[in-house]
Image (cartoon, rainbow over all chains, first blue to last red):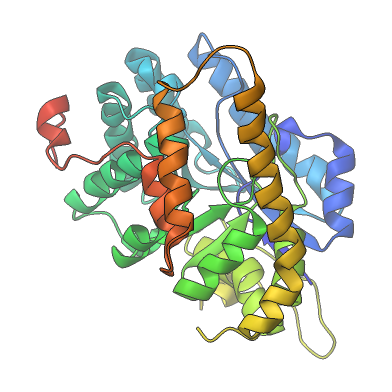
Length: 284
Length: 87
């Protein structure tokens, strides 16, 4: 089954992973900007990272027929440095017209601090000003519930935010309902130990339905599995869910959400008797 | 959403996996017991015990309840506390 990984950090992966993903049915991915494992010391460090996301990774992906998109921001962990964050936010518009940029992300909270909240709100301003979609990181472990509720407060306080153009990622059993009830999209991250397992992601689909939900691997430099989405597909099949439902979660939903971005010009693989749809057709 | 598999089918499929996970859990707690030192006063152990009690409930939202055991509480006055002005 063709699938789209809506959240995967390919800068952390070797080229062989692109090949493996292509073999397993992946046709495209979106890569949010994130923490590199260390704090960068200058705006130029981020400028180079954004060049990697907008110039290098699309070329690596294209070698295996994969379409690569990305999101730009300074992540919540480095947002503790407010002055650097403001420099990065001011620089981001240099890249917004690059053909694979879908919006602002993954912005959010990490330890739910005042500085993180300030920088989050300033990212929202940027997204509104440039009419960008938003991809949101919610905190880990014991901070997730509190941080997700704080993020939803900040989003719903701002009447300019179009909720159908916001994806709140890393939802789990205790946060998914809040995200969906407020009209946002939700992403489930399939991690080996933290976040969701493929089995629990299937449970959440069974409990909440597939509308506005998607799954991702978030494959990065930590313990993670870039082929976690096929694991989810297999688990759904083992539970005898119809192919149409599985496809909705792993393919139709990501494309429907991303098609709201002007830069999303995804070309599906041709299927027998069906002409390939372009990004414009998908938006329609 | 109706589940395609019946409860007996799910139990047939998952019995060994569930058994394995319970054994892993029991063995981990045994390991804590055998080791030098004490964690009796560690609040994390209390949370583990609270979560185990929830697992034995008969409700259909145990996973969500367990998540809440391991979560910091949400305070809806946080914007005042952190002095972050809503838009």
